[in-house]
Length: 214
Image 1 (cartoon, rainbow, N blue to C red):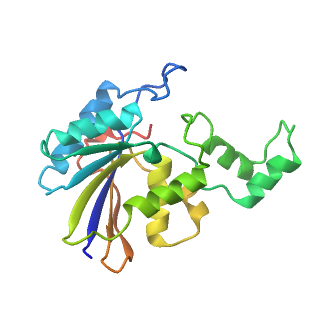
Image 2 (cartoon, rainbow, N blue to C red):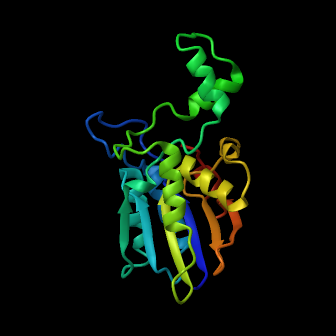
Image 3 (cartoon, rainbow, N blue to C red):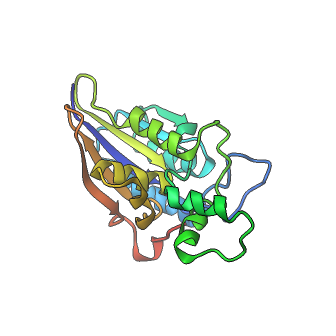
């Protein structure tokens, strides 16, 4: 077994909405394209083996820009990398079960309610927790044979979950992490399966006026 280096990239800034009939969601803004190009230059020197990406439009467009610097590398879209809510604590679920018609939501609960509002429909039959677990188990494994470098283009919630998993802390900690558009997180999976977080929310390749959250 070898070491797998994963460079996680959040998609660039996206348009605020999209057609309700279009499950792939909105694409990048003009600024989002600029962010993606800056990120492509940042990762250009890597000897990348594959680019995995969410198949949602904003992620696919970001991945296609990154691929310009790696023209012979395959892009592998996956619904497993769509945005999701990767974990919700039991006390939150219980509160909504006990207060199905509540108009006033406590601040501690509202934090979680805001996390799952406005998400793209998954359409894969999985809960967010199941999806996030399966994504981790698929992509964050030792390399077979020689060492590998993978780029994974996905979304804020899922990236935050991957960071928490790499640190091996409580899964609900993802809610307290933030990631800029086109920021990079680097995670290494050693040959023995041990994960290590090398960097989080690396945005030094972006100009000050290119740093955004959404």
